[in-house]
Amino acid sequence: MNKKFIEDSLVIRSFRQSDIPTIFSLIERLAIDQGKTHEFTNDPDNFRNIFSNPSLNINVIMAEYNKTAIGICLYFFSFSTWRGETGIYIQDLFVESRFRKNKIGKKLIDRAIIEGSNKGATYLRLAVNSQNKTAQNFYSSIGLAAVPNDMIYAAYGRTFKQLRD
Image 1 (cartoon, rainbow, N blue to C red):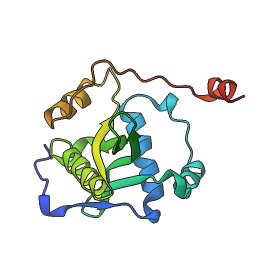
Image 2: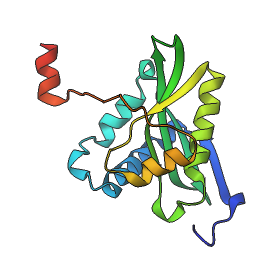
Image 3: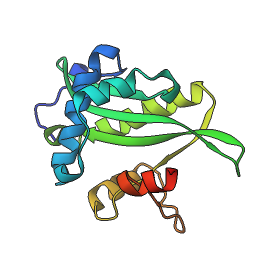
Image 4: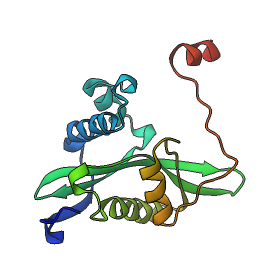
């Protein structure tokens, strides 16, 4: 825990369009933190274009400390055909390392859940890297449960194009 952390200096809020470069920077830091910069291939212009596409409906909760962005929770809406319910899917959760252990990650998730439930969401899902034990422990500590039989499959780049064509 940051010993000088003052709760009153923390602001949790929804993003504004002007935050997009900051969000990009924080996601880039997430890749650095996880040692996965080789997988981070996005660029600021593409990122801006993605956020300007209203059909994607990307939502971000920002954490600011003394007016400096220190964390984000990026999510979007999903739908479960089996449950017949709308939910939220957290794509990225990041808090600057020096601010961790101050419950900021939990506050970001709580805000995403509130915003999602205000629009009809009834559940939350996310994926976590199988090697990221710190994140797994954090998610378990706040009440999330691993789904034992789910595995994520993906197609990127050339494979995606081959499937498309």
